[in-house]
Length: 510
Image (cartoon, rainbow, N blue to C red; front, top):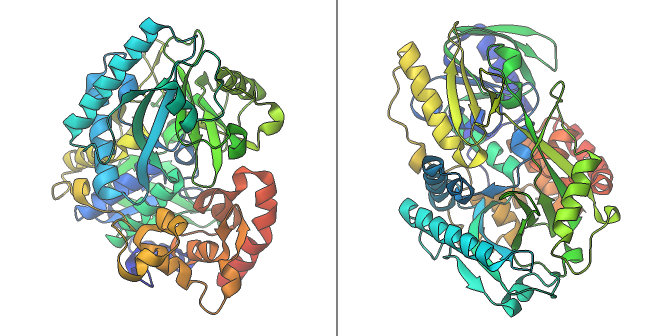
């Protein structure tokens, strides 16, 4: 297609129009607060079932935790070790839906190599092998074929070095190779969800914070103008993640911080798979080295309590940077140094605090809670299982408020851009197809008469992509463009290189 479906286009003009309409008719079936993967998933689920929906987000789509993940759509292997079979199976099933039905343009198979150095004894290796075989059983139970996610297998030392030439060859016996799902970009998944929801009639309002929240109403504030708007809703869902307790004080959270490093791909010598690295004395914990489509590599993941007030944008402390470098260096021939780190990022997991004061780690399970005044709050879970969380939240809202909903449709509902490009679409650059799917040619069309917009402004991102984000993906300012619609801002030098182009395109379309 040369132009997107206008029903799915988000932009400043649509936002202004829908705010005005909402002021004139402030009654809706469902109000969702929070524009991350959970909130946009709920908006899509509800709108596709025939409800009138408003999604309000104080900042931007994917502003919070949803853009700071490891970009993995994983099948639940890690939960088998703790006996959480239900969560493991749910993860594998939801991964199957994402990679085969709802977002195959954004998710692809990622080989993941666990190198077997001397630090991993033969008994440990046998246990890990058994875990990978159980992971294959999960994959098969979800219906994911081997041509989509190949079966796990043991590989030779030579094959391990072929996949990861930067590995330390001394003491390397080979490795365990498995496959999981990888997102081209977690923020792009959120944008696709929001646009698909808009295509089903949802009103998606960014820069629109909730100042007061009740079970049947809310006071919203337009963060751009300061104007306030009272909304009457038959049901209200709080999907603000680690900030949920700020709107519903009964929700008590103890956030956990997950930090990542951004590294140049060349320091790994031509990485052809991700690396799963056992952390010494980590009791089953692993560090991940994850190659990205732009040629860079992310290394993570920490799991540390986040004390004090919850920041809008968390940062990775130097202790986390040192921890990750030390973990990754246990398997590399050429150790990484702080100078190799191009950038860092951190996300906060919403862990639900137990009544007795201990932290109950529900970040991989999800909970749907209803407060005394009727506000429904969704906490926990993870990116992979957003769809199931959304289904449960809408089911709860429908039951509480007697909403006339149709059955859930999202198991088989493709997101914007899903599907194999055909005809002219197939001739679009592979990088654009990987990010935009069937809309890749529509992105190129933004450069009609402006060949300069096909030139990269930084990190391979072109002006055409920035213009598309302004006209169709709801980007309202420079940060929306460089931090979320693209990830240019992860590296400060790239952000500076792209800043002028972003400002020019925002002015042109403002």
